[in-house]
Length: 370
Image (cartoon, rainbow, N blue to C red; front, side, top):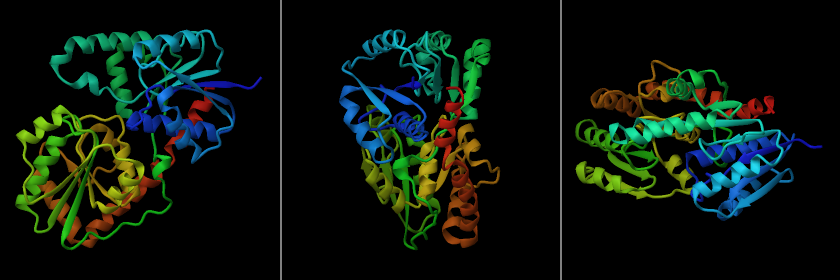
């Protein structure tokens, strides 16, 4: 009898976000192993989208889609928990935090980050409840997957002794299959303009306020070129509040995008010189790899996941405690001096090579526990 794997894809979005991208890439690499039948649990309204996206990269002969008609998360949770405890699977893969509980089947729950738990005292009671729920769900899991050392530290800090004793597996993200290229050729920065790109939800957590403060400072104090700023991500009520409080300088050419499909995302990366990635907390940071893949130089907030990804203490493009002046000087050096740009390119080439096929590595790690 052929081995069967259940892959819970109910959090997949029709406008793919970070967890959706991680999930579809991990699934594609598991399919490419060609070792087991995979049952994919997906919301009915997202079935055709994920099928079309996967069919561009992998044969779907070994996949069976189980379409779920419910829309409310609680109904999906109940359905999955009942279904998975009456059906026999060799392994249940949950690529997001809380889709269901698998009691009778061996399972792995993959944790990305704990941003929700780091938003201040106003959510203290919800945070406490969230911790209890997570620890209860994880009680039934055989393995906990983590996408970075930063996430592992958060898991250990959150779970006290309970989660520390769980079997943990490193399952990092890599470059998404929709954006892969084989060569890395850095483009020249235009003599008359600099193009900056921001990718992610336009909110405080993703550092929109930091981006605006920095771009205004750089424009006012260190720049003689025309500046373009592309803001690609979901706008919320929080976005309007930030933009009202922190106005982008009028002489900066700013363009807003909402959801960005793959073809437009590629074009934005290609035409941009720098990615401004100033998040306050991330599990990994897939946009960093995407930017490098299209020769767009990342300028990063100095958080543990970015430091872990770069692995270079001398990387000059870190935002640390609003060091706008020193960061602006480093940008000017890269724009004006070819030797400084070459040093950056050497570092980014190493990062690209080291992380290009992380999803394949993660699929193989899951295969080991199958």
